[in-house]
Image (tube, rainbow, N blue to C red):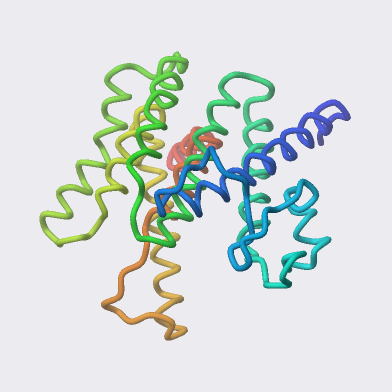
Length: 256
């Protein structure tokens, strides 16, 4: 049960996360198109009208406008509030896991990159290198901050899954995308080998379950490809927030 103070900080984190999610929507839309994510005001995709401040409030604007543009009445994608809500939850989870700390902030920064990666990969089946490169300094700082993480375990975390993915690509062509491999190599630096393996296991399990559902519902055939990045991002996020507890619980279970 949260104290009143913790509830306030958790709420503030959630709101901060949703505001970040609003920016991530811009990144997700513009980055694959080569449009600057910094300059230029947000506008309606259909009529091109520049959006006013009250139309940019995370989640609330979508609800008040009933999912339609105030200028032309065209439908606004449900993805926008979804990304904002996911970002808010990621910020709140980071706070609940590590409180008010630099580590919590850095983990949320990684989470924000993962959210952008996941949705861009769903749209384009590619992961922009700029997102992975932007995660490198954050991953290095997180690795240096973790007193339990040695240089050897950081290197093992970076290589354990990424090398396996490279080998699998040699055996079965295009098993994993280059962006997936680079993402795991970078995030493995601060996850360590145990959490890196956990994140990959979560990705394979959830991705496999989703693939089975697609085939069973006849939404996709056996030879079809799907983006694996979103499942990797999910696995990485779960591992960096509560991976240590999951691994310890699993080890303790094996002792009985």
